[in-house]
Image 1 (cartoon, rainbow, N blue to C red):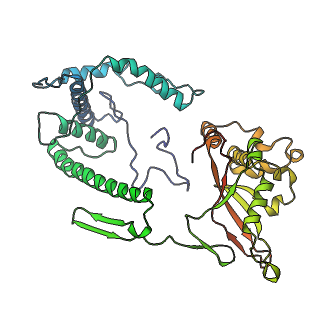
Image 2: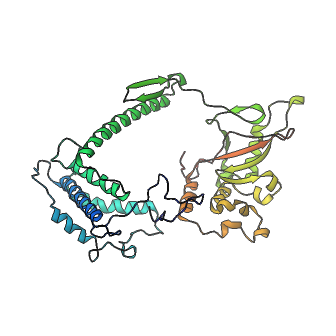
Image 3: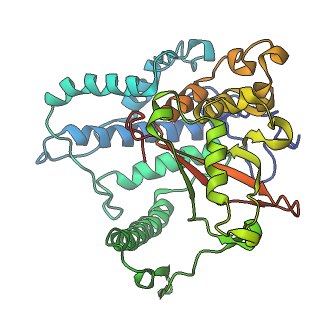
Length: 399
């Protein structure tokens, strides 16, 4: 956290990041006091030793036979204290330059690293018996559960300059939190699953329910869901967040790199055209802008008549938008203006961009934000999300 936000860092408004309700944490070290306060260091060392003892005991119990009886403390204070010497150099904490290697290869994606870890654990897991499960019991002082929770929470409190509490206070707080979490989470999960079952059964909206629950009162109330809020669209028409305008990509453009922007605009205009005939017929709206998330892909005041852009596949425009980021307009300039393919040919992709572009290849649809203008009045309105359905053989994308 401190590497991401150092003590002298500022937020987006130029104000100190660690101010107000944000407390700057400090890293704890065993036997080494950054402030020189021996009392403070002694308190920190005591809770660090408690944490090692209680955490090690729970871990040992996971591997013991189920019928094994535990008498007394498994880990002594001396053993826990000596354990810190294994993780230090010369009795002092490791410097940042001496930290253990991260064991991550930047060229290796996350999925490959996870697969390697799983494969390595398969052989090991076959040689051990199933681990024992520890069910939290706050009223048994001999199981070490409350002692572990107290040690872990006190370490976190010390990091933020909060006074530690004893096991009795920890037991009192845990006694309230655990039941509340279990009961409320179970209740909400069950109600959500019931509504999902109704959805799968295509039950009418009148059978669905909103739930308002307060277990402390107790209070339970169920109401019929309200209709989705309607937003005003083009020429007085309304739509909700659930409405979509579907543009389907046919097989021919699908195998040639995807539907082009010109064809996308043409198909969209065709859907928006009025069904009226004769004197009552209204001219189709003008498509003002087409955006994908925060990126503007097309604007009629910038790109009207730009044949190079209109011949670009929609998937390539989206990919270029992600690569170019905030400089998306630079990517729309012609080769003569930019001396190439714009920023997409020059920018070195970050790891996040590589992942996002890889996900784009597997997507089966894209949702675009489209603003249209009335050719008679000049008024503009936003359409419902326009969903481009890619040809079904685009690689088994996610629906």
